[in-house]
Image 1 (cartoon, rainbow over the protein chains, first blue to last red):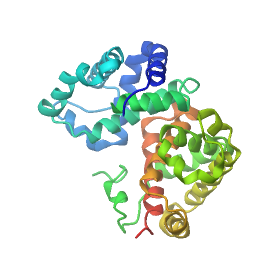
Image 2: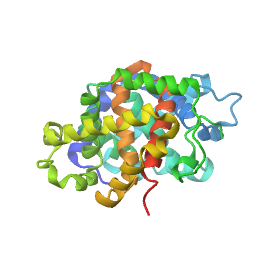
Image 3: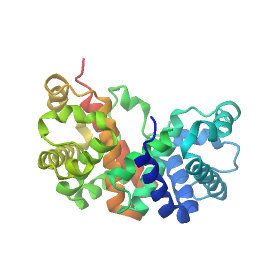
Length: 133
Length: 163
């Protein structure tokens, strides 16, 4: 799905509101994911423990949100901008792409709990399109 | 797979009885006792129509769905959103027999309304987000897991009578 100018503006606006909480969002989204969708834990079996709020989850949450920050900055050309990350997840980490949808959903839920007023349906649709891209 | 996870079995309509932990039962009942049906229902349905615009195809008789503001202000959308919540209420009151509780509703959605059952999941996701926004911090991962398991059973039961 391609992002309209309105979508891009909505994503940038929402990001500017939520970005200062990005560490907390990343931690909560990943912690939530492994609880709600325990099958995703298999991708982290190399960690000594896969539990919500652990130091590994926090660090990985930071990385994920860093990736999203990168995507926001490359919003005009996500395909090229995220090419390396895409390759890494496909060929090195071998993550089933269905799991990105799962993590996206968890990110959206966290944003809803933390920013209920800002996360309007309009912001939601733009962010959903962006994360799916 | 642990019993209280959102199992893929539910999507294929397995005949296995759904088992609920005490935590799940209490959580589901607690959520539904706290949310206002005529606020959450309309908000969830409106969100679904905005975020997944193809779902509007099922509401062509509802009048103006031209943009997000029109959808949110549309009285037929609000009414139907509330109706949906009362439908979910029946499942909450019959947690151990959701499948049979929803037999008629499943037939209605398949044979009369012709709703693609994939859309039930989209509405369920929007409802999760609206409830998350209402409950904030209290909507922890464990609470979300219980709520989504409930919705997965509902979605599966609604899809049962399609053929």
